Image (cartoon, rainbow, N blue to C red; front, side, top):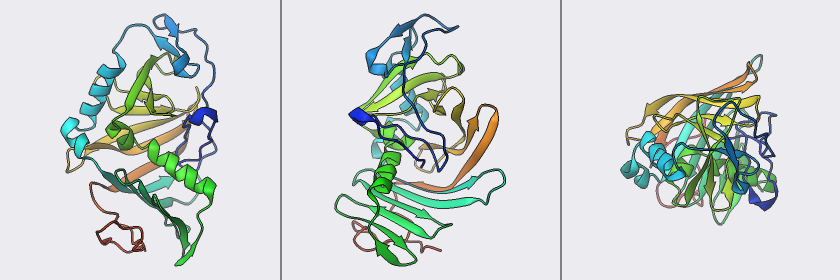
Length: 269
């Protein structure tokens, strides 16, 4: 998923999804809650931890099972999809994305603008209508950060830690956690307590994303085919994923320097 981000100090990864104006924040929260008493915890970036409930490791195992199980997650190497985004009163936005987790390669194609962004460990570029130019550093940082909050990137990460459960009084149906991978920390992610799947992403008490319509891919991996961004009770945008593939080469036509070995299979149209 892609969204504008801001990069705070201490490399805390704070992301939003798609090109909306809502921004993520991590700041001091009130400990007042109708739930169980909370315990202050410095590693939770100002949030508070609910007493009782599952441990981070227990919830991590539930998460892994919910996204397809340890065997399927262990084999997971890449993710690609087509995304259609609709906003009230605006034209639909269409894009293709590809993340090679193992080799840290990224391709993002904006079908509306005809812009292809490419990133590898050794090179990056912005290609518009066949003309290549330097990829702006801010855009490169945003795209790389977005890959780091892709759900499958997080679930497969060997260093993944779940910090929580968090006390989020305005959203009590989910089990809330921060996902830490090394120095990077996700926004609060709401998990279904039973399945372990991610059902919400929280940006503030009012602004959040609802993840829904989980579907099984042919590898056994599960992925949410639809999400909605809300500001309070107001639906701001809706996204639909299709052509979701894992463990495949990019279906975007890319230059030879981007490919490790396999020729891409689908031309950009």
